[in-house]
Length: 357
Ligand SMILES: NC(=O)C1=CN([C@@H]2O[C@H](COP(=O)(O)OP(=O)(O)OC[C@H]3O[C@@H](n4cnc5c(N)ncnc54)[C@H](O)[C@@H]3O)[C@@H](O)[C@H]2O)C=CC1
Ligand SMILES: O=C(CO)COP(=O)(O)O
Image (cartoon, rainbow, N blue to C red; front, top):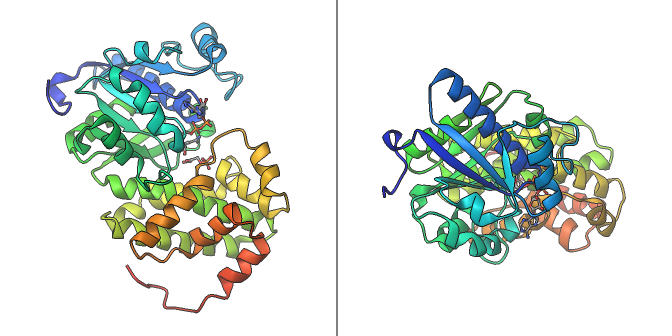
């Protein structure tokens, strides 16, 4: 078995996508559409995609009518997409394992899947969070639980609101893996007529960009809910990017990654779109609903709510100033009202625009 996938040992590849929520379903559909294209053109690896889901009703609907009625009623998925509730079946023979579960459950999910994951598989994270308690990025959780080298762990991230991509609207993303050839192979597996992936070797920058944009999206949502206009939102986005870059670079990322698709790109998509769960969560809070009301109304994963705490702690551990994240944590976890958080945020001492990293 080789340590990484290489161009000459991949022609036909089984891809298991674990998690049939909004992004897992969409990403599995991207790979299945990409495989159709590869079949037609004769170029690139051809994937057989198997999607794992917890709920039998969803799995049956995908297999019988190519539809995920829970997340995308009325949207026809690729007919070759096969779903199962049996993780062992999904993982059997899979060379690429894609993970799309909530960040805070990943560790326990991996522990139960571990024995079925092939030793030479490449594991891809689609998740945008930082683990509470350990302060680990998702690739670090994967590396620790599966005891695998970072070279076989990849991340896909970017401005990827699932609802737009399931409709096959054009979008771009970054496929990051420290082993460049693996990133290129994964790029080939998900390149389709409407999805254009770029490669990167900067795992840290891509992951921090993805996790941080959820936190900034919450803050922008709060501003929207409070009735503020574009100056406020542009200020939060720009200073949010500065905060993201400071943290990422301190953790070893390349500064340029944060001005790319997984940084600026994703930040802009999340902060401008009513489709974003994080932005919507913040907006409801800013409009006067209580945290309990907003939590009760939120069915899908809004990663920034929990990850804001671990991200702030990560920043503090490394001496990074994180004022927007701090304001979000106070609103999400310490009963501070949006008005109080705004006052505290605006009354901080002034400083040069380029401060710290
Ligand atoms: N939805 C989107 O547009 C995008 C989401 N992401 C990221 O993808 C990750 C997954 O998010 P979504 O698919 O959007 O969330 P979702 O809420 O739509 O789906 C989550 C899935 O995980 C399952 N799940 C929940 N708890 C579980 C547990 N304890 N064990 C196993 N499975 C469990 C749910 O049943 C559901 O199928 C998040 O980290 C998110 O930030 C990334 C890019 C785009
Ligand atoms: O990650 C996303 C877009 O790239 C989805 O954002 P939300 O999780 O806020 O919906």
